[in-house]
Length: 162
Ligand SMILES: [Zn+2]
Image (cartoon, rainbow, N blue to C red; front, side, top):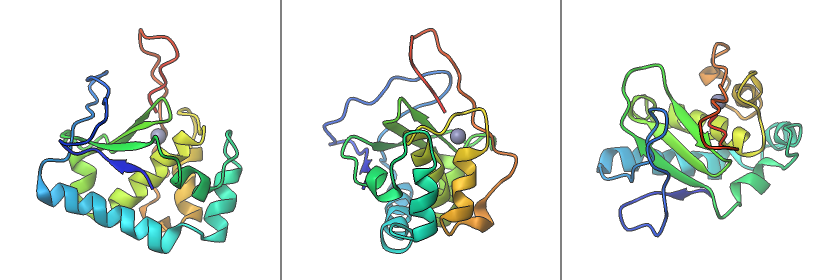
């Protein structure tokens, strides 16, 4: 399962980029939400046949379990509460979840993590592929048809923020 970024983690998190932040979980309540979301995914969603199969249709072709088992994926904390950001994945490795999404609880957080893991599996930022994984991964009620990721090409080459 993905690693959770805490203060003692031996993890070189990205610096602030285009308004996104990859901070450690310091607040215990926020940490508990992300841990519960990961448990939900691990115990109830991982291994679901429609979810595993849907992930294989993404550009990188890995199953959900393949993505879940990657050792280099980290989940950080972004304090943004503006209400128009849920999460981000940088370079298929560095996920961050906003305080806004976390405040909506463990299910919305689980949905956001799955959306970002779809980007880890190559889902682009200019269509609904990532968000549509929720329809197949037992999170239909958290699917938002209006969420389309955006690939923002930063000044840095080959940095895909989705
Ligand atoms: Zn996205």
